[in-house]
Length: 214
Image 1: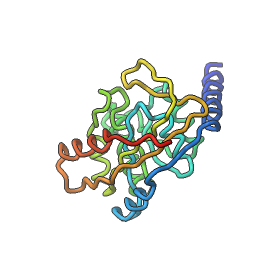
Image 2: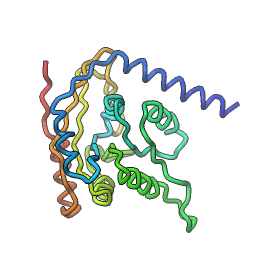
Image 3: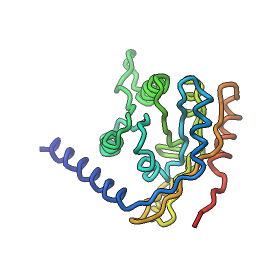
Image 4: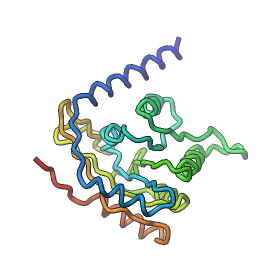
């Protein structure tokens, strides 16, 4: 019975997300950045870096191409993983335990993601997730980009009308029929950059002011 309820909850939330998505109007700006970034890696892929507060519209805006993303192994994250997969993305979640018996699902998930990135898939990472601090880039994305040999692109999907929640990230849910402007920052190649320098450069790219076009 519990499994049935969980299954129905996942499906309901997915269809609710789909319903919201049908009302949104996406406007893509400077998409040529993606083409330019493709020339910076052997297989033409890259990692999108996004703040956690823009996660919802960030997933929906990229439904025309398959990306690899990391989702927590917790039961609470099951609907998120299900929705990402239904939108065509590949989800890295990690195994519950390593061969030594030590729980390190996050590390295993990163290793799974790197393998998928090396296969040629592009990826997307909420760089301050899953619990913050908000708008502070964590090193995981830099480590994965270095291992996979691909550039990082600051990614800003900005809704013009949204509800903002009183959560650690001030999560934003675009209101129905909102215009969502999609911006890409300049690709950042981190292969030869020291970790701390790469973190600073990526934060600068993510915190730049993007114009709200009419």
